[in-house]
Image (cartoon, rainbow, N blue to C red; front, side, top):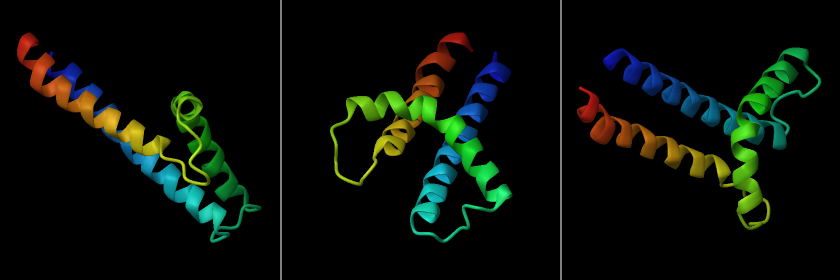
Length: 96
């Protein structure tokens, strides 16, 4: 059972880093720091968008418009933190 919890924790941790990378990439893209016509940069951007957008889109629909500020990644990161804490402090002791 420990292996299952560790695998879920690893997946949530990996998704946390993908969300952070996506946010940084979007900032770099918005400020024209990276070349959007480069195929490698475009492939990374499409990958990050395709991986994060299914999770972020429902949150963006519910959140009020805050102008140009998108806080949906922060909300998802808080949810991931809650899930990881809940999993280790509440669920794991039950199944251990």
